[in-house]
Image (cartoon, rainbow, N blue to C red):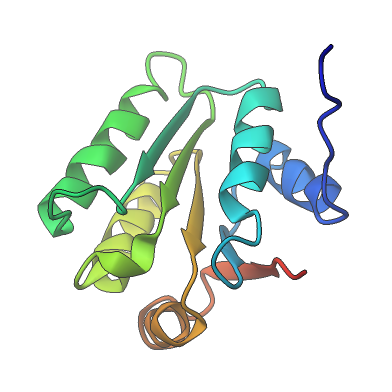
Length: 147
């Protein structure tokens, strides 16, 4: 017997954003174990564009260089016809200096008009909030995930 997949009320909003032209970085925030990763994976499985999912929650240390590499892997999916692609970075707040790196890469893509969608997931509102307000002002949309 196959279990029915349940989608959260916020799912249609997230899915819509992934299918629109690139405008903002989408940021899923909320407490641990609330379903942010499940929501992102549901969207990843249903969008019609190439996706690249990574988690900074791995046992090995993830740093700015690692984030640069993951971003480049996602960019490669844009070629050769410059179609949209989606990069999902889970637990982004665990990467030291993540917000400055995301700002630099996002701005590079904006300047080159590359249609790379970015979805960031973070469980700590304080850590993710500080990075967003200081470095990424005007570049993101917060999508809160609640109980």
